[in-house]
Amino acid sequence: MPNTYEFLSFDALPAVTVTETDDKLTITAPAIPGLDEKQEVVFFLRKPTGQGIAIYLTLQPDNLKRPMVIELDKSQLPKTKVLHIDYGAYVNRRAVHRSAVAQYPAAETPAQG
Image (cartoon, rainbow, N blue to C red; front, top):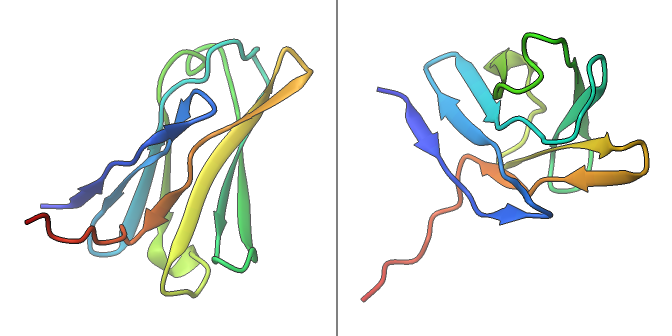
């Protein structure tokens, strides 16, 4: 059974959901309202210090209004203990909308007592 992490939202875009299996990481983000066909959404996977990779997803008519899913082999990820993941896009060619930052692996929350 894979682990699934969920996070809070920011700038009207929720953080990605990260699902982990033995060798794969699946990153899922909801569709961003107001985007046009052939527009790009960029996903940032980075170390806390900022270095990392960007993945560009070009939207097609069939996936414009559906959740965006990226599947990566864990060997493709930046080498770090904690990975910060967020995504964003231009809406109406003016404003950048950016999501909340998800942490992988998820930060442990202190026990409530």
